[in-house]
Length: 414
Ligand code: DSN
Picture 1: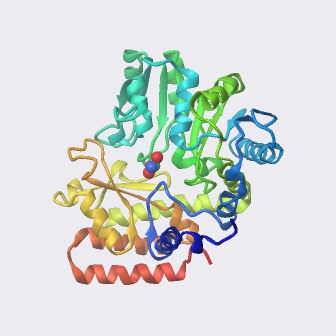
Picture 2: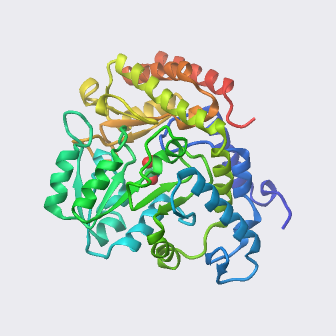
């Protein structure tokens, strides 16, 4: 029982070490990823993983829950302070599980969801046909305006009147602009639908007040807890008190069993960190860095969906500037020099999701490492250099050396 991982399972230990080294020696620019603190890592790797605690603090189905009750209560209290919702459930295992909890609480199978199309920035769990949400519910989707790349709220209102949804979903995984939560709330109200705002990507920006909050404009708010908020991995649901019992029952016993209390502990620790003034400065910098990245990429002739960003990510549409380079090619070339991004579909996409015509690039993780606009500008030029000449060995070598220097100057973990 007490032997170290390296003795018990050298294969796994070695892979873990190599992953940590990969994170140190590359520039992580996947917009949904971040680096949590050593304290969050420590909380997640604890004996709390051993405990079953179906139910909620003070009302569990198992004995011995007094300490995990305290951990879950702390996570709830801190989340309530961060986002200001009436009721918080910190048990969802992921953002998708959080969305499932809301669907189960609010609507019935066969009811209609109106949500943003995946290729226009939405998410699989907002009704895509390969996901449970697209299989259980009737799904209608809205798109961004092809000219501006922004959600067209007048068109959305019109569509809502036509399709008469039971639930309108706002929020995204690849939409670079803020949502007008108030307007979407009003659109949902007009057609007597619930409004779910999924803030998975921007939980940290909303908590820090650098992005508008949907709390008060949405009946339900969901998120994941490991992206911009930089806490333990998982999901979260927030709602008005009136829906608290329905949400809690939809999570447990409706769609999950025992909570992952080691992750709930990681959430509690990350939330405490996010309540400090340092976190507000971090969130501001994430947005400033994304804006600096957008400026450089535009200057270098790359098209960005919506021509820029309000938040932590940019979405490069390669079709204008590099029609023969796919998102997959760009991802691979950037990865070869140590810049890790993901290929991404773009509005009006004609290629498959495995190929795509875009790349999504985010700043949360590099900002955690200490990057500011100056370093981000350097990275932006490296990205543009590689996209301009993906097969040129000299360009690649130069970019690779520059990435090594940046990684050495900004370590993730000391
Ligand atoms: N996988 C996340 C993202 O990259 O946006 C969403 O679940």
